[in-house]
Length: 138
Image (tube, rainbow, N blue to C red):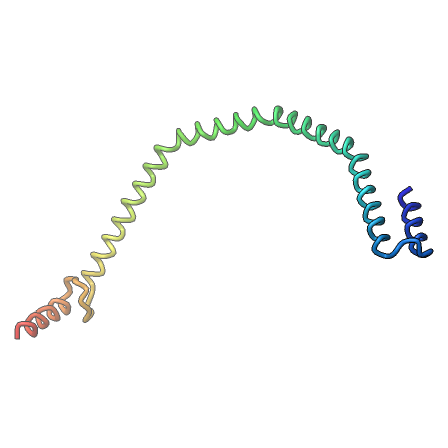
């Protein structure tokens, strides 16, 4: 029906009964009506579809929800059981890392023979410090 109305508007334009601006206004009005009609015709279908999706989503949530809650509770229980062990392993790892770092520093200081002021106990470094102190005293 809308196509027939458009043809009528174009025929009126062709016959000179209306100008181009009036034809555009009429065609715009026909387009608006066709959109409104489309929405009106499909609104009920869309509402029914959304209701169906909502019902299915609710059913899914009811079926899956308890399983998700059980899994969450089991994860929390497991974490509570493991937390002391995790903390203990972490503190032991930190102590081992500190001990290793101390041993490395001791080894470096013991074996250092550089001219740098590294505060180690090597002979060369002691001599450098003594010479520096002697020079500063002058």
